[in-house]
Image (cartoon, rainbow over all chains, first blue to last red; front, side, top):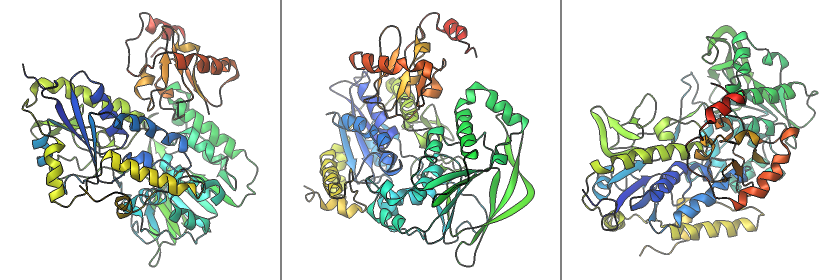
Length: 460
Length: 102
């Protein structure tokens, strides 16, 4: 019987990624019966992943999830290893040498592609870029968005698509006391966008957004939702879907759409048009985007399995700026198996697998495990399930003592990496909050890694 | 915004809801669960997981309004329930009785 998981030989776990699934995996490991030490690796100096840089700035309540992560981070068995890129600053092989287990919780960092001509014309952006930009993520700091056009198009009908629409639709007064990045607030203040079109390939009964997010589009200061009542006509299969109580989330959204469709003609300065059963087939423009060609779809298939099939009916929509929000996709990491079709780390119940079976000691949770679905809390159940698999495997793991970050810290210092500890992050955090105070914002985020590091003393 | 647990929760203990709560805001006594709205972030993750549709968010139906106060009064004093528990004996029958048979 090995002593792995005892005071003498604690289970050393590396978590790669500091978003919700990373913190929930940490929580589950620290609450488990065996003695576990968790070192969390994050490529930015700042933790909290998409809760910091994905959740919209005007949704502060959702960001309160951070207070739970802060409590987890206070645990003496936890160590934050910020500003360290796994796969570049330290290899997965090196992590394997220093830890009994690695749990990858690095999310889905890129976008799915539409695969239509002109997709990459200037003026055509991904939602990820726009969201990262308005949330002050350093990767997107230097992007530019030309909002001098009156018409913007958002492709996709999930909650991210709604966030993008809402940020384009809100007035500066509605945003200026949020933690939106100042550079984004200044650009949005000069936006000339008046008509926002949100385009979905399926029907009003299948849209992925939640009714809460949808409802907000009807509560804005200077923008009104516009829905064509004809778009709410349902085919028999869709009617059957909405009659099924298991689809009650879609029923609620559909009811909100009905309310939108029955509003009097819009009178406010901006409009958000929700269009269904249309897909982009081409983006046109000489040099930059000028028009998007849409094909009208019809739904085919059994209830709950309907797919959007193109008809031969086309239309063109003039627009100067467009955001593609059709889902995220995970990115491969050197030294870790990757399912290129699904954009995830292939796994069985959270155990990473390659062509020949389970890879010992390597686990995965969150979006990089199951794909980009669900909301913050979905990741808690998901991480708990992965940690359960990990704990079940404990007797099979290499039980030799592992050094964890004790060995890697000097190695990283030697490579010129300034590791950001949790105490360091707290200094950065406090500086952000202080700089937000002057503007009446909960915080003003640092949008460059160098700015964050400048708050800290030189590495010891 | 408010999210509350209501009477359908009684005598079930399916507790799928607590597994997706990002902030551990469910509390419970032997009878049912309650949400602490001081902690809840209104993400709504729990709502579709309740097999007996006991959880409501704004707009709360009129016949469930009394549960706002009950959640508010009872949740803070009771232990946090953050892990899935075994359903009570008779939970499936109760679910059927409420009209939520699979």
